[in-house]
Image (spheres, helix red, strand yellow):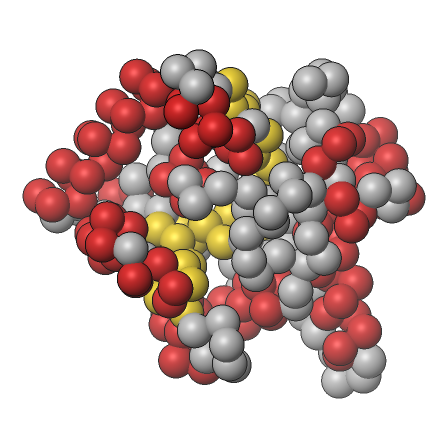
Length: 243
């Protein structure tokens, strides 16, 4: 597997865009990253995050481990000139969520197999409530097909970024990266059921990185409490404070 950290070279346009993303985050947001050491420094990896804001993908760029990270982004954002330019500049992969977009699926697999990092939201769409939606199985299947690990990420506070900026307040946002994990290969039987179990596991690993009020569809899921006990004291997984 290729070493993306050694071979990846930013284009001049991407280097400029990354600079301005970092500058904007530093100037406008009180932003904190926890657990970036959990992101593998080389090889393909899926970074699976909750999705409450249009800027979540940009926030994932603000990590210390990978320069090659890009996002899987809905075609609807192509209608917004700034987002269209930014996603193309950051080598984003466009997906048509109105259908089974097999072309995008295969592009993702190739991207991951080339040893690069991809940020995605298993919910499949942006939550309008600030709470987790039910995860869809596509991301777990992509990770299985590409044979890459998943790093869960929980972003807290991004849902109020624009509202607070309009009120001339500085938003507080935290992104936590949890330990990487991999799913066992799918067997020939009960594939759909097992894939849904994998998806729920991935979503619970995201939820455990978020304050309880973000848990939404997964609120009270017994796996969250198990994970809190399993991951207690591990680097990058601090006790979640109340917000």
